[in-house]
Length: 320
Image (cartoon, rainbow, N blue to C red; front, side):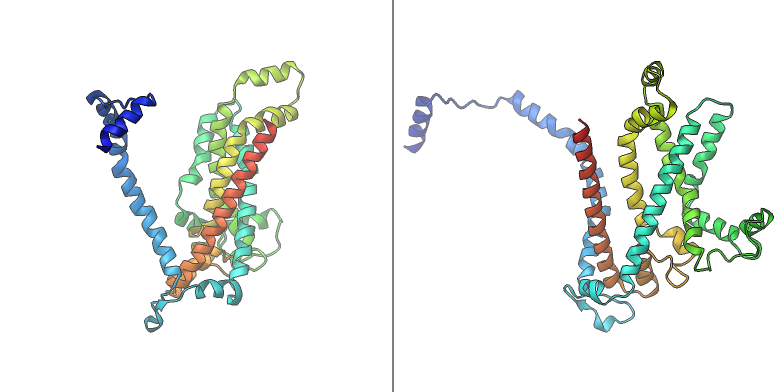
């Protein structure tokens, strides 16, 4: 009795339910086809991304040390309390990470942009130089660290030999063993590998800038400096925002070159937070505490990325 009354009420209100035809159902099913095709790839990526991430969060709440298995078990927030209040190495490692990221990204942006502007000009041999500029980026971090360790060698390194011939130094230095030079030496080695990333990406962005903008600027009498700041930089802004964010995250997580070149030493002068995690996990087998520091690093990077993107959007909104 209730069903007819309901239909009668709907008819009085002017509502007439429509039956879905077979054609409409077929259209709805066809809309789901793309999701079926990409589902295997999504599941594969999720298995390689979500599972390790969840595993790290799980072990961060555990006492999990392979050297002392009899103490293993649930620790709650004890690992995080130790990080914030009782770990003398955490804050210096965090400061080293900050110094490393700021020095690397700022210098890579400036030098990479300079190289990109040069390679964007028309001259003979430009194609060859563009290929050579990309070469350091194609070399692995381990091979790069071996190459630079030989160059920095106190007894047979080419750096000491070159600087002494140029009268820049009076005696040979152990560049990666001296407290005064080790951080700068590692920064230079990473710059050699990292600059091509900005050079190539910014060069491709430069080639996408319409030539009409530069022609209009020349007609208006704008010089190179004004053209650079009012045309080139604004056109490169989106590329700079994305590449800088990516490079900050990559350099913060950089461990291969530092680990192979200095091992975090001497006296922890090159121990970044990621290097500290590698030391805890590989040398001390303390996976629980290392996972807790990894979670802290994840939170730091998440806050940085959100703040960075928020500020860039606010700046674009203000300009708009």
